[in-house]
Image (cartoon, rainbow, N blue to C red; front, top):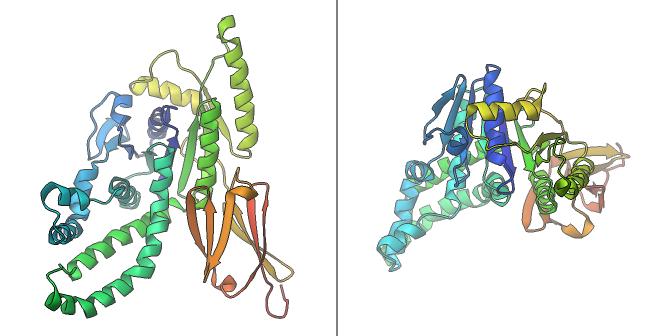
Length: 394
């Protein structure tokens, strides 16, 4: 079973360096490792000081690297759908380059990146896949796509196809509006099927972990806290926090005294605030971390005797408990408080909103017909209490 490690953080914190060094540490112990970038900035090649392309390239023994080509993936998977969209836009009077641009849905690059993660994880060719993700806001959108789009697929796709078969022939007689054929629906179905498979991999705690990379800076820490909350909201497991660029103990110049004090304060905030997650610390390097040798040294300072590919923390962002016939659904929302969370219910789903992000939690069969009695936010946990069994048995 392929281990998947995803690294994210605010732009400029050393996320790419950390992902590249982790991949090298995994390869150095003999694990067949692929490191790939979903970040449009594509700094991975710069970190290794080697050219990387849309296919895996050998970096060192047991290590390959890849920078995904979103345009190429789009042409492979989106062509038939895009052709239909171009026909619709042309019918509406939008021609040429404008129709071409409008037929590409924003965020497709992230979607195709997800598809590649699934392909590599299921191929059997790799022991570890390390993903250098885009900065945090894009990463949250990237990881929420399978959850959000699968709901649309499950609810709208079968009905849409049935309606198309009934109404399509009528529309063709009454108007020149292009009607999607079975080929478009089949391409769309295959597209969503791939996303659903990605969701299963990335939400499997035995396979996948997210690691947050931060610097000892107030704004960076605040963003990392929000990221942790949102990742938990979507059910992804964070197994470590990497604190990068701490001032070395050997720096004795009085000019740095205040900086060292601030770093110690921020480090304490990180260790207390992210507990019980392990916090991995690495000092500011004296030079740019470019090339295999520099990255290997960084990995040694970061992980020491730890296994870089191991699951460093086992957590459960969503679980159910039962007591006195009542069931409590517990959702981990680290750093969120009561005022941050909105909770609703529609049919067999709980609708959560934390900040700008939403998630629909599909309830198990045992809870679908039970009323919600109460909901509480306690110590970063949302507890939703459902009415008891008929007859009150536990």
